[in-house]
Length: 190
Image (cartoon, rainbow, N blue to C red):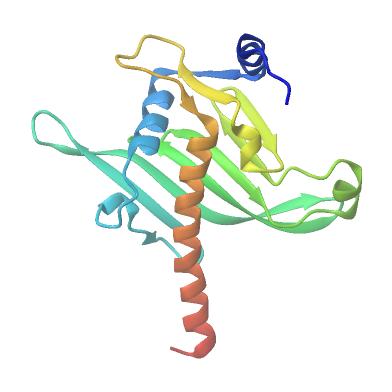
């Protein structure tokens, strides 16, 4: 077994790391989502059916004057993607701050054209955050991206893009359960 030089390995990893610099508002929302518990007892983990296929999750925070305000909102809805005259299905997960400004959106594609699959294997995921749009075939491709604030934020630390996307996928799975159960109820005539 050959021994590796730990300094060389650390250097290789550092060269693969890509930083995503976002404004303070975007960073704070991302950090709040990543740091929020996924325990079912918390209100923000309970899906709210907006319509037949649209689900949202909302987290509120308490201000020092005991006024409750929205911290963030996540909406999940099906989309149609036009490619080469075809209508392909997918889902978009949009993240908003407490006043309704879009912070990020993650597009998940379900279908691809034959040409997309033949050429390079199309990206299943595409996330837009700040000034960045990053595509990936797998969530694991986001592991070397880190989100950091462009200005000083107290106690700021880099947030893994893979962790953020994984948290969005947690909400996606919960939303899918709600919409599939609604569709099953309609199909059975309940």
